[in-house]
Image (cartoon, rainbow, N blue to C red; front, side, top):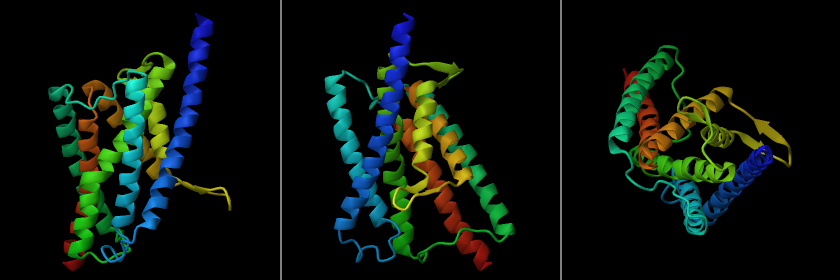
Length: 248
């Protein structure tokens, strides 16, 4: 029995490394395809088109992997409504709390003259394009790539869900680590590894919350909506403060 547990743990760690490699390759594939598509007339300031193509490519590849694994290994990635009562409860609480946090954070930034500086003009095209990306693609793609896919595969590798404390499981924490790593900037030639520690912590915490909701609700839908709503709130409230606070 002990040997089986050790083998399962080793397999889980190997799968974790393979998931990290897959995550890196998905990112590179997204950037490669985006570079081949001439989107400059639609988005001359590169504010939303490149990242939208990047995420769409990631989603297509990830969904292909999920389709194969669901058939091959009989895995359930929870592409279903699941526990609607539980999911809606978490989504409502999360969105309300995050709206308050976003307003408080931007008020603090505005008072201290630290509102975001954008690399593009806040015109109609850029505002609609960036908010559409956050609403439609950011949550849906990243929750598939960083929640449904790794959590389900890690459970299969470990042989079961491994509880750490309360509703927190090992597979959720490992998926959150992968999600945090995606928010670092690195390269091998030349060797560069840049970390924003607040963003690292922020993405880990949100990833863990959304992972818990994924497992509790048995649906990827509610984490998707949570992820998209938090991004839209943070970006949209930033635009509002930039327009009205600076203009006042």
